[in-house]
Length: 191
Ligand SMILES: [Zn+2]
Picture (cartoon, rainbow, N blue to C red):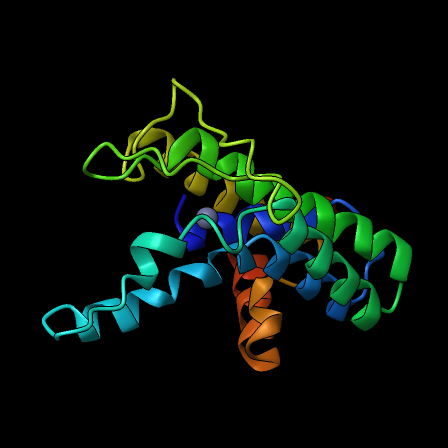
């Protein structure tokens, strides 16, 4: 799935505990995006593709380095270190990370039909290469449906709770979004 979809899945996981602090919400949300840092090798690969020594970092390491249990545990420990509520945040970070893996497993088939098997047990074992035969393509309609549904859920929650994922980027824009939502969809409860 695309980083946008992973982001909203992570935000939804973070929203499952309403009392989480802003920082802890951010940790849980980004845990659902962070496996794809192993895709950053695309920069080196594109840069060197016509050179004498091409670096195939994207082809070789995307869906490998960051998509496994070892990386999940490392991210969970980091989450616990930086979190305010350590235990609940670390647990949600672990879950959020795994939603990324499940998302890729079910809906990230490449344009060339490549399934990107997930070597889940790395670095402990190379035995498991997870794939699912029903996997749909990265740009298939279920991914758009899931992303659209998550965005609507995010807006509904934002209107109700008074914050949105924009809080991670700009407090001012977050406040503007909430004001706009509450103006457009005023509370039906009258005194
Ligand atoms: Zn991924």
